[in-house]
Amino acid sequence: MNGTWKLRLRLWIVSLLMFAIVFAIIVLACTLTGYRFGFGGYFLISIGIIFLQYWFGPSLVKRTMRVRPLSKAESPKIYAMVEEMSSKAGIPTPEIGVSEIGIPNAFAYGRSKGSGHIAVTAPIINLLDDDELKAVIGHEIGHIKHNDMIVTTVISVLPMICYYLALSFLFSRDNNENAGIMIIIGIVGYGAYLLGQLLVLFVSRIREYYADQASVELGNKPSALVSGLYKLSYGAARASDKTIKDVSTNRAFFANDINHGDRDVACFQQIDFDHDGRISDEDLAKFYRAEVVNSFSDNFTELFSTHPDSLKRARRLAELEFEK
Image 1 (spheres, rainbow, N blue to C red):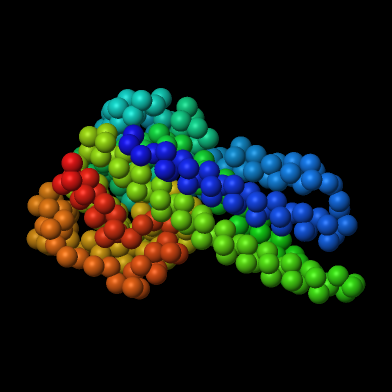
Image 2: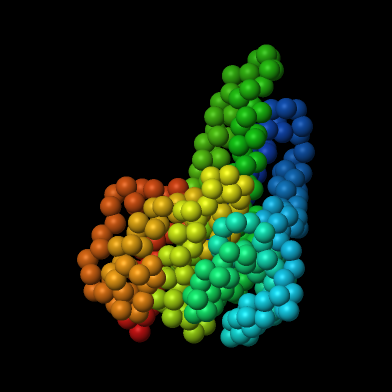
């Protein structure tokens, strides 16, 4: 798939930065608490943390998202779409599951292309038409093809390590002469947590652009994917706060950011020129020719989102259609 070396390079750079941050925090934590293992020991501890997340991460996603196997008899249409998209992508057919959550969406997870999983939530099947559903599945196949889902799984836990280490230093009851230093390290750890979160969100947004492109390269219409994302945003906007909260920590795996359903709907409505609740080829063509500008607040809010701004995402897909 075109240009994916840029995605791989960014994933490697961010992964190395995140590892360096965690390694530094572990060295400081162990040193100040009297546990001195040497460079090799600190390195092995850091690698061990990453390996545990790599190994158990997909199982945790499956459990927290309440995924069960989906049989071919239950949904032959889903199976046919996944098999077609994976064949075109040149990867083994992923295991297919259904997630028992009340938000229409789909997601991919796994350790590698050979052990990929795709899950759809029950509400998505009746919400999207066949072209939209296939485009969304093609997007998820793109994540498996790029093998970016395991990178997201691994690096997403590293900021949390910094966060808990920061708390342990900031609220330590140690009254010895190192108390002031421990508070400073706690503040540094919290800063590392914030920086790490921004890096994770950056990676998450970048990989969505490439998965969108992959769906188009697999033969899906850009307008079908934009339309599918539009409807998924409606589904997220209508979900209860409790439903959103229950799966919010894993929202980076979804096709769109479920925490910003209302905002995304408002964005897509700007390009739904005939107001029929979907994005047609004609709508996308008009949007491509129109001057639709993101506000400063939209651009700023995007920094804290797991997915790209919806208008930017639609613009990129329109360019794939009309700048061939």
